[in-house]
Structure formats: C-alpha cells, structure tokens
Length: 153
Image (cartoon, rainbow, N blue to C red; front, side, top):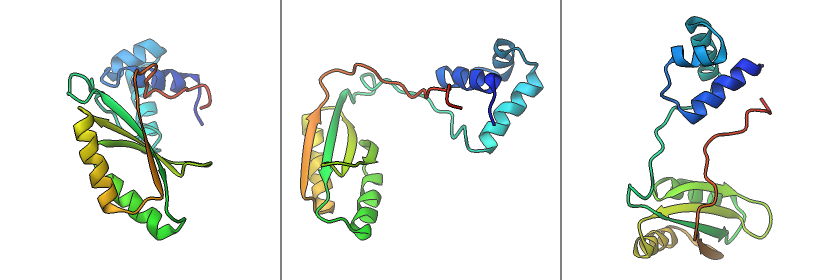
C-alpha cells in the first residue's frame, strides 16, 4: 500500500507539515505532480488526518501535565458513552485512553497550575460517578513527539 517514497514523504510532513510540495518532491526525488498525487492519495485515504501547528505549552501558559487514572464505578456501555461525551467537553483533557489492567481509563490533562487542575478535577467529578481517581503530576517531560514510526507502513 505504501512504499519507501511514501514513508519519506510522511517523515517529512511529520517533522514540518508546512513544507511545500516542491520542497518535499525535491527531497524524495520526485517531480511536483507525482509527489502531490501521493500526498493527496494519503489524505483521501484518511492516512494523513490533519496538518496542525504544535504549540509550545510553556509559552501558552499551560506548562503542567497531569495524568489521571480513572476506575469506573461499573462497566456499562451507558457509563462509558457518558464518560466519553463528558471528557470531550473539557479542553484541558488532551488525551484519553481506555486501558486493560487495574486502571480503566487514563487521561492526560494540561493546565497552568494546581489551582486550575483542582477546578478541572471538580468539574470532572461533578459530571459523573467514579470508583477511584488517582492523579500524577509530571515532573519532567523526557520525550514528546507526535511523529509516528513509518517503518511499519
């Protein structure tokens, strides 16, 4: 489905999505039109979902990352659907995962300070019932990337 040139194009776009098609084409050894067609095909397939700007959290005054481990009070589709709906409405929740093991869900929250986190926490617990919530404040970001490995394409 994808070849080495597609992987190179994706690597470039993941590093710097605002590169022109001509620049990308030159780097991967194609002319403009074939390169554009490959990018367009990946977009049409939904493989390239979006091109976004990554914002510096500290400059945006949201330097704090908090992970919230959630245990559901019961395993029912109604609760799950409501949980999914509620976290979508909280902009500080930037990622959410359903897990195996002792924790049912893991949320990544970004906030400017602990006081704001407390407001987000109170907002969350006012919306739904939880069996347990455990928060962990990230002390240091050791690695952050949005780039996916392309060697599995």
